[in-house]
Picture 1 (cartoon, rainbow, N blue to C red):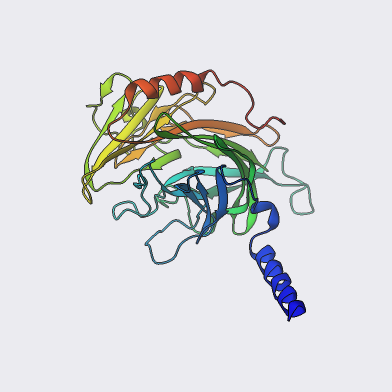
Picture 2 (picture 1 turned 90 degrees about the vertical axis):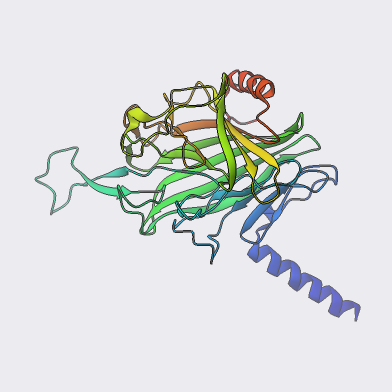
Length: 344
């Protein structure tokens, strides 16, 4: 009987290792933040067991999501356990929690010298267009997939957790760009602080055309009375328009979205803090969205061998926007100038 039990345990461990490779499931002391498999990806919990967020590595079924990709954060919860993000809202079914994607973009693939291209001048390239935001209006979204390759915990203790995420941006199954994310999660002064650094390394020249929206975004809950705020108070600006970058809101260190949930009457919110090392940014804040858009002013091109690093701090809170705390966290964030991907 003992031998049979040991064999069954070994078989179970083998099955678990095939589904979730061991480097992705790491054990830390009970008083630490933790990363563990969830239904469609992984979830991060506080030392007390409260969920901070799920990171979806597989596209859920039967929720109406029209984007071909997963690779997003949802649900993202407040310290009291209220969900602040939304996936596949009925008016924008391609939006998905906290996500990153550009809607009007293209890769320039060099035409190599061959029998068929020997007469072509140098610098000639083919164009592969892609919409990873996944609206599908400005460029194709079908077979444009951000595919997760790995999620693992770098470090965890009672104060914070640090994750690394690897995604591949594909066109018809071919890798076009490698995305590496560093995610630092903590709970401070009654809010969750999620520091996100994205390194985008294309295999070919990647051109992001000027658009009013796109890039990093947080889709908030839409059901309830809501408002946006900035360091100077509630925002009363005209909502930006999708086809006009000039209509975007001006650059600010941060914007916050707060909503009184229709479901239970509780007030919750989320803020996005920009970083001075990001490209010049205007904000496309509308339809319950926070979107610091790096392509609002001008096109952006990322070259092979010269990755683009984007940095955003997300603050998730219960109650109205904690303006003073957000300002303090923003000033701290702006002072963090080091390379988030440097070896430690």
